[in-house]
Length: 86
Length: 131
Image 1 (cartoon, chains in turn purple, yellow):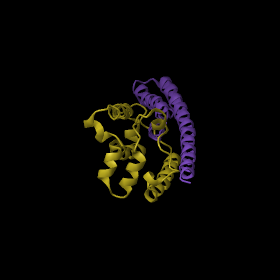
Image 2: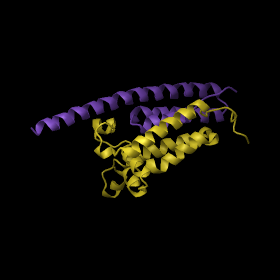
Image 3: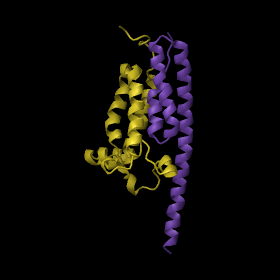
Image 4: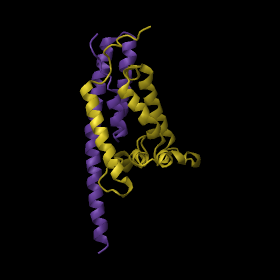
């Protein structure tokens, strides 16, 4: 049996680091990996592993972009607040 | 009965553990020094900004800051799941058998989804779950 990474830790991390809507499918597929391995379904486990990895990256990049936009809006908001005082 | 494929399945590579450890250390130092409430550049939850709802992770930045300063009560108030879940996540990273057990993944999913639903139900008694 080769290695079938389940990406569970990565999936949980991208979910709590605020990419929640796309992190959930990542956790679902990550959880599937070991359930399928338990049944002896190695091919299915590899398929779930691949999908878990894909959703981890989707969640990671979208979360990064969303957070960068959030920080950018925060800066603009802070500047607008400062400006309104003068 | 041995769990099938227990030998080399589903665990993190040594290099990945080092990477995670490094990120955790840097994040820990930053979150110890910086108070998220007064900080404009630490990102707050994009999901919360877009929808107005609380995701399961909302408040965890503040919770970790409070934890690092030994204030467990405030941390639990910001995000009880982060306080309980961080040790569990550490266990999954360090202990291979936990990471590959099927129950662990489904439990993590169930707990996160349930917590996310509960903290968005507008009941006074559930206020304690909101950051």
